[in-house]
Image (cartoon, rainbow, N blue to C red; front, top):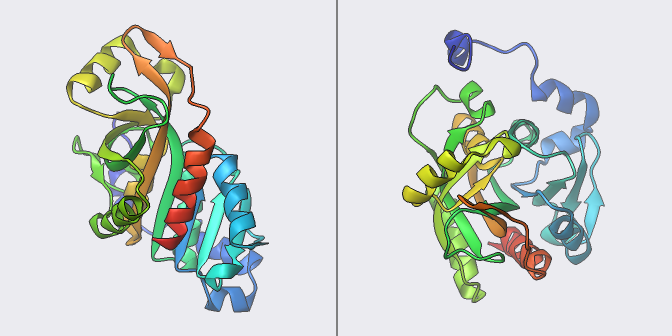
Length: 252
């Protein structure tokens, strides 16, 4: 049976909404003045870095660790510590979309699929293959990958180039089941020039498209997945690269 079970849901109202949560947990002032951007940090290092660099003011009302950045006049919020995978990331983005953000940049790590991508390489994810479940509740089922917002991605790429950060761009494979990645799948995606595998991008791009929020993701290759096995040697510079990317995500 395809996901979702009831495909008529795309034109139906939902019973639970993030607006209900926000009305209960945020003050009237906060509801009137939402941030413009969310920087989603899937690892601890960039989240703590942004809190220090931009004087994060803790924000209650969401799952995980959240703050408004004082040095951006509260125009940027940061989020992390809410868990891993598509459902957790999508729920956070949906809540911020309901609050009123216009764009989101997600910073994370991924497993490299291509031999030439070593641990520590930066990849801007242009599109993501939908091998998870969450995106199918926001967009109808399709074999086509879901794509990043082109304008926001260009802004991020300009910031990377200006900062002399070496990066490449390409497609990612988003899966809910990291311990079920098979040799046949790895070979298939390598041959299709898919750059990396991770757990959130397809869902975030789907939520963004469904809710009219510009979203793009940038990752640092940490481990590598090849047809011969899982290579766990992680470049020690990965946390520093994540911090640099996080700063650029705020200022791009």
